[in-house]
Length: 313
Ligand SMILES: NC(=O)c1ccc[n+]([C@@H]2O[C@H](COP(=O)([O-])OP(=O)(O)OC[C@H]3O[C@@H](n4cnc5c(N)ncnc54)[C@H](OP(=O)(O)O)[C@@H]3O)[C@@H](O)[C@H]2O)c1
Image 1 (tube, rainbow, N blue to C red):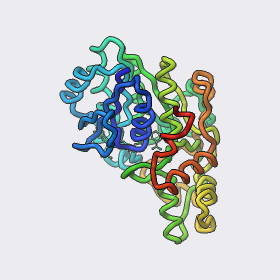
Image 2: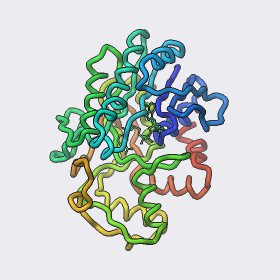
Image 3: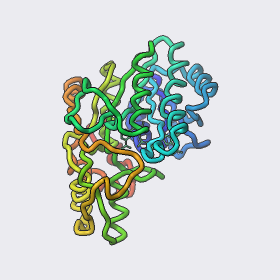
Image 4: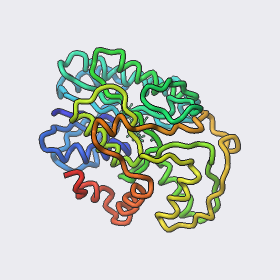
């Protein structure tokens, strides 16, 4: 298969590149905004690509002729999207439409679009794939619009809804776990909300799940997340426990008290049975996911356990 990955330098993009690249039967084209890549594997082709630039997207897609495009590129700053809606729409919705346009001209091109639990309002969890979306934030609205753009197009699509993504990698922006770790390492007390609940998802696992969905020829919407739901405060305490840092530095607070610009769903717990049945897989629970990330950081080789884990061979 020819597989093209957008946003390949992001958290999920890095994991997808490594895991998809293990299969020698796949030809891989990694793309992101940066002019050059830090991936050194000569089997990884890399091209700079801004998915908001339709003519660049068209020419790259028509020359590489992907069987699958995995679109991880997005503006994931939820409060930023609330404040700069035009930019959020340009990347999170128009960027997806720009991929759909050339994909329509290829015979069998499937687009995998990453989506979010923020398409839900969080008032009627747990959510399966048929639950009615009702986003509270502009980020959530843009992710839902992207889902609809793909599902209403003639292009084959897989919508992968995920949440609370965490993991380690090279030059990444902070995710919840790396943010909590940086706070704990400062040794200063800090506050974490108790009224936002969801399923933490190890990015390595999510990448593996996406590859399974592709290889099994799945189409449509899938919830893909870790199996347990917990509030952010409890998750932060688990992080402290696994990394042997001081949990007494973490104090409970509420979303109202910290005043984020965008509203978040209070409980977006997922039901993941559809994915589990289709792929015969279940992602790591929180403690094993954190322990795995801990090993990756401790060993200093961000992805070595991804590369040697027998599940991936
Ligand atoms: N993180 C979560 O908790 C979470 C939860 C649910 C769903 N998701 C979805 O999962 C996907 C992957 O998330 P992630 O955390 O891996 O994101 P990420 O780490 O922010 O990676 C996104 C990548 O896209 C790149 N990018 C930004 N603008 C671009 C453009 N115009 N054209 C091409 N690439 C561009 C970014 O480059 P720069 O760094 O240079 O900007 C970055 O390398 C996203 O679709 C997100 O909405 C994430």
